[in-house]
Length: 447
Image (cartoon, rainbow, N blue to C red; front, side, top):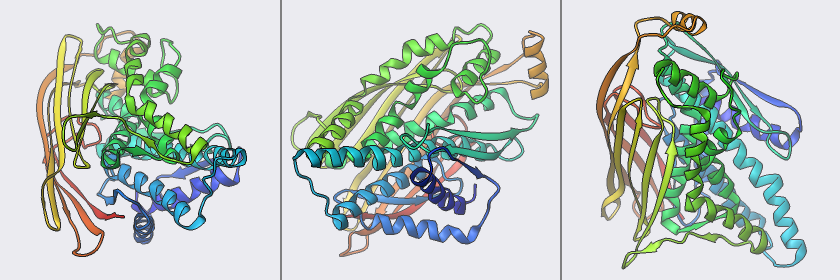
C-alpha cells in the first residue's frame, strides 16, 4: 500500500462518515500516487504540533506496521481534541443543555471518528500489513471496504485479497488474525501514552475500548458452525488451525470460553468511565494505579490473544515512573501438545541526558511453525475429500531488539524518534514474520 493512499483513504473515510448514511467506501490498494506522501506526513505533523501535555509522534516505516500507524492514530485524534479545546472554546458547563451537547458530540463526532480509525487500522494496517509483509508472490490486496460507522450506518470493514498456490496454511492464519493483532498493538500504544499523564480523555476513549476488546467482540459475535464464513477472521482461524492440527481441541466455543478474561482489563473500565465523565462534567477520567513509592505506579493486566500456533495468555505489566512508561509481559500457551512462551520489556527512557532520551525494547520467544510440501490447491482438495494433509513441525526460538532514541531540538518542544534494531524469524505481533531490520522514524512534540 503506497504511503499516499493513506492520506486519500483518511479523507475519503471521514467524508463518507459525515456526509453519507448508507454509502460504502471502497479503497483500491493499487493506487500509488507517491507525490501525496509528503502531504500526508505534513498533515499529521501539523496536528502533532497542536498536541497537549504528553509526547506525541508521527512515525513512518517502509510497510507501515501497526506499531508505526498506531502512533499516528493517537496523534491525529489527540491533535483534533487539542484543536477543539484551543480554537473552538467548548463550554464545559454542568447544565442539562451542556450535558446533552457533549453527549451529542460524542455520539455523532468522536465515537464515529474512533470507530473509523479502529476499523481502518484493523483492515489496512492489520490484514493489509501482513499481506504486504508476506509479499506479492504469496498474496496481494485487491481492495479494502470501510463502511460508514454508527450512527451513520452499520460500520465494519473488509479486506479483499488474492493469494497464490505457494501460500502456506499457517500464513493464511497469519492473515486471518492480523486485524485483531493490529487492534491489540493500538491498545498497547495508547496505554503507553496514558502512563505519562495517568488520565484518559473521553473523546478518544472509545478508540481504546474498541481496540482492546476487538478480539473479545469478534469471537463473541462469530457463530459456531463447522465451515468458514466468508470473510470471518475467527472462523477462518479455527478452520485452518484444525487443518494443520487435526487432533486439536480448538473450537469457537473454546475460544469464547477463554476470551472473556480480556474483559478484566482495568483500562477498559477506566475508558468507559472517562466517556461518562466527559459527557457529565467535560473532564478527563483518571487511571487508578497501584502506588509503589515515590513517583512509581503499577497496573497489571491479563489478556487472551490468537497466534498462528495457537491461543496464548498474557500477563502484562505497566508502570509509570516519573511519568515515563515501562511495559513488560510474559505469555504462554499449550496447543496440540506444544508449549509456546514469550516475554518482553519496553523501557523507552532508560537514560535521559539533556536533549536525548535512550531506551529500547527486547522480546524473546519459543514457538512452533508448521509447513507442508503440498501446494494450497492440494490442501483444499484434501479438505474436500476429508484427507489429512501432512505437516512438518519446526520449533523456533527468536529474539527482537531495537533501540529507542528520542533526540530533541534544544529550547523547543520538538524532537525526533528513531526505532532501530533487528528481529529474527518468527511471529511477533505487529512485526514482520521473517528475519528483518526494524526501522521506524518520525517527529515528536510535547506541549
